[in-house]
Structures are given as structure tokens and as C-alpha cells.
Length: 459
Image (cartoon, rainbow, N blue to C red; front, side, top):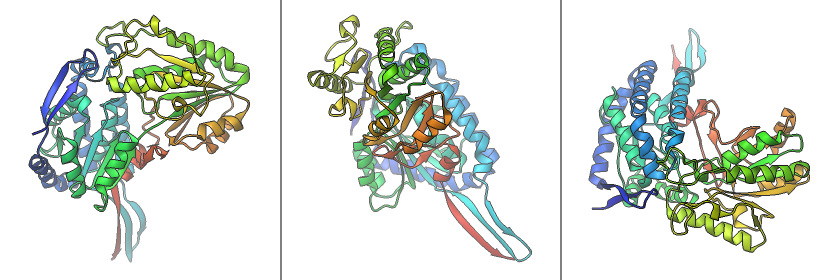
């Protein structure tokens, strides 16, 4: 029997231990889900939506308990209050469009023929959720999948095992049919066996590029549908006409919030020459204003990274860049909690960087950002596209047409103007290149969790 251990980044203690479910237990949960899914799918959309909204409400009612749990599990400071406003926003928006998004497309309704395209639930949707935004990333698929008439099987990251249990508690307290939603603590071996057997109809995975490749490999030949949100190296571009103070505040928050552990966090910034010096000075001052420490302390504004090995990766990227000529602007010694061999890592701003350095090309997923000077839009576009990833890009200008024009040339899933690091549930959350495939939320999110079924009826 495999034991899953959740090591807290707060102090290195074992915060939670759970026995991993056996293959037989997983198969039992799958069978239970399939036993109730078809009846669930036959219920009116409005009824399903109301029950899912109650399920989400039951989850949010536990907020006060869940905020410190998040701090213990992955290190986000309690002062930020969790991520529950976003959970509510996303679930409510998907509820508001469910009827229209899932409605049949009518082709003909005449005395001779009735022709239409219906949206059918896929059946059983598996969600493999990450630790960095453990509630938000999971709700992106869980809520619309259930609303669309599917059953859901959740496997949460070991780093956030308690989050999966909270979802199960909310499901059990709601009117969801028993077995329709199941949270399972699974190891890699059982997960792979479930996927390779084609036991689920759709898999939504959020994680690393390597993890996404492993998911594709496990599903190979099973024809299981896949939605993959993988790595990112999201850029910001500050044009010469930008509001530089707003750009500093927003882009640096996008780079450092959650200790930089954001799927769409800003990891590299390109600044037009006239604003470069002012932006760099502002960025350094912003980073220096953080207080690194225990995330349970309400005064802490920057908590530890989720694991020491993640912090070590960022330290390694930064040290390599400095040896290659980059200049660090932040003295880590000012942050007394920063200690090698721990997940506590000071924020860092690097200049004199270029794309030969790992810190500007490989995902960092930590509190470090490199800033480069650019001469024009063409140079900025070339640098933004010089990446294996494509999740979001942030453009700072006062000219909407210019932002759209630049956006058309950027290889990315979302183009922001004068904002960043935000997921709008009305827009499709998607990416390109090594960032993955598929799309969550919006009307398209519902379509990806259902299949078209055509009716050609001769009356």
C-alpha cells in the first residue's frame, strides 16, 4: 500500500498522510459514478445547475477553515484570504450561460423534417488538479462538467490533498447524487492504469509539460479526450506610451504574487527604451517591499514556495544568469527568512539578461523576473514569441488598436492589455505550443465537456 505524504513548506513537517486508493477502490468509484451519471444527465439543465451552485456554496461556507489549510499545504499567506472570490465568480458565470451554451443548434423544424445538433455529456470526466491554485484550477472543470451532465472523478496533487477532501465534503453535503462526484487519493501507478484502460471519457490535467506528456502516453490508444494546461513563461511588454507606474505595480504583482507560482504569472518583461530606467527602478522598489516569512503570519506578504526543490530550481536559474552577466537588483540578505535548503526564497529582479539564459526561456514558477530593453514592437514581438510556451501575454499601451495589432502576432492563448494574471470566465482559457491544448470555461469550455450529437428526423 502506498502512503501519500503532504510535507508542509511552512516548517517541513508532515501535514497530512493518506493511504493511496487501490486499483479496486478506484474501479469501484468509477462504477458508482457511471451508475448514476445517465440519470443525472436526464435531469433538466436548470436543476443540475442549481444543485451544482449549492455544492459550490457548501464549499465556500468552509472558507475560514480552508484559508489556513492552504497556507500549511502550499505556502500562500493567509492575509490574501484564499482564492474563493474567483471560485464563486467562475462557477456563477458558468451557471449563467449553461442553458444557452448547452442548447441544441436548430437547423430545421418544418412539417417534413426536424434537424438539430444536441450537446451530449461525455460521461465520466477525470480532473487531475495542481497545488498552486488548488480550488480555482479544479473548479474550472468540476463545475461545468457537472452542470453539463457528467460525473466527475477528482485526483488532487499530493501537495494539496486536503483540498480534494474539502470538495468531497461539500459534495456530500449537497444534493448531488451519491457517487456522481468522487475525490480519490491516487498514486501514479493506479492513475496510469485507470487512464490506459480507457476507464474515463475525458481527462483534464493541469501541471508540468512532463506531466502532460505522461498523461498523453497513459491515454494512448484509449481515445480518451484530453485537456492539458501545462507550462508557461508569460511575457509583459511595456510600450513607450504606457502608464509606467500602473505597469510596474500590475506586472510586478503578476510576477511575485503566490511566490510566482501562477500558471499565468509574468516571468519576463520587455520595456521600451524611453521607459526602461523608470520601470526598472520601480520594479526593484516593488520587490523590496515584500515581507518574506511564515504564511500564517498576517503581516507576511510573500510565503515560501511549495517545496524546497522548486525554490532550488529558481535559485539555480538565477545563479546561472548572474554568472553569465545578469545583474540582480535585490539583496537577498535583506530578507532574513531566505535560507538555502528551504522553500523560503527572496524575490529577485534581474537586468542585463538575454535569451541565452535559462531564467528567460525555461519556466521558473517562482519569485524571479528578468527585464530587457527593446527598441520597438517588432523586437518585442520576436522576443515574446521566442519561447516554447504560449499561455498569456500582457501589453501595456494607451492604444487599443496597437494592442490588437501586436496581439495578432503573438503566439499565445490570451492577450491582455493593461492587465495580467487574471482568468476571465467568459473567455476561453487556452494555450498553444508546449502550454497544452483544449480550453476551459466560457461557452467553449462547455463544448469541450460535451460531444455533438446530430438528429435528422423525418416527420
